[in-house]
Image 1 (cartoon, helix red, strand yellow):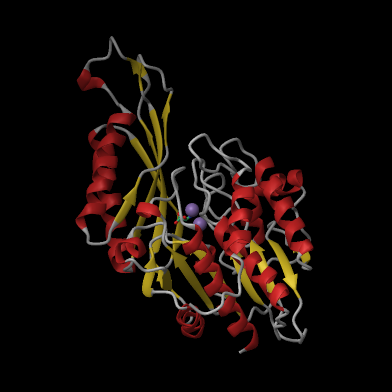
Image 2: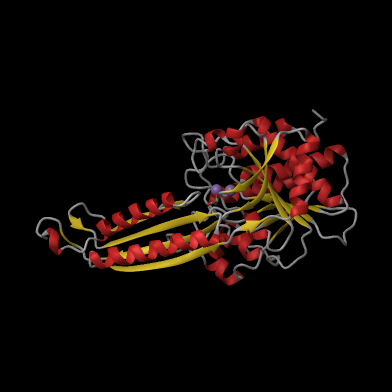
Length: 409
Ligand code: HGY
Ligand code: MN
Ligand code: MN
């Protein structure tokens, strides 16, 4: 195995320090976007980047950029990073690995005295997960021009707090412009969050692109009524209608090869055990590597849901709140990742991403690629999420080599 540029113990130790911020009982992480815990991890990240000699800038969506100067300031920078926010019951590696692997790359460039022509910027993208504020990846989306700034700042959480208010509250309402500047390349390291690399016994995933996704919100409105006095044939039960639609959503996901269909959130009103539910709100996450198939899945959902709503005498409001199109990453960047894996002596394979990532938006404004490493049993968005120090170190090593290639090539 060739000499490693990076320090695997330092990377692992940094990951374990961050894992203490928002640690959950079962060993996971709960750092919802723009909470006090997100502020705490951001402050630590900024302090570490400053120690590594980086200058810090924060843009109006709270995206944090830690810049290591290159030898030619006239050249556009290479960016590398991911996100520090987590799912409610998330793991210790989703997102944070990509940010700390980029920090390890900068720390290693410093250790090895390696200068790069282009500056290197480590990035923490705000609210990648889309758990607290929908949609996901909204801040990298604003950076890439998929959403305007006003839309991004106005996203609200379940309690009506906006991204703008929360950025101000935690002190990360930056004044730098969001996007609109030249980026030479962006590379994101991430755990695969699926079982393929582990199943194929490969250390590195050379990511070719990411599948398309469409997110919906459904609100069914029937009639609250007494559970004891209302005959079954006189009910307008929003939850019973929803139950049929949820079952159909799962069937739609199963009906096409590589289909994904998930109902992750549901609110029932008035949520009283002896009142027939008059209202039911729930979310739908549909994904597929083929846009036309995904559209077909969506059409089936709409038609079926309308039929169920009329059968149960409930009103239905079905909105598509987000479409993240199929993404193909930049050939030159993907080749730099493959070259890094080859030079570092790791086993690797081509792979596509089932998950969405900030790289999916940044690919619109910069040549982009991703690097995957395995996670145990492919489990993610779960407190049990786990990855080995060696695999994570391999991902950071390949990221570092790809950064050098792209910053000097
Ligand atoms: O939902 C996703 O694919 C990403 O993990 N936020
Ligand atoms: Mn992620
Ligand atoms: Mn995630």
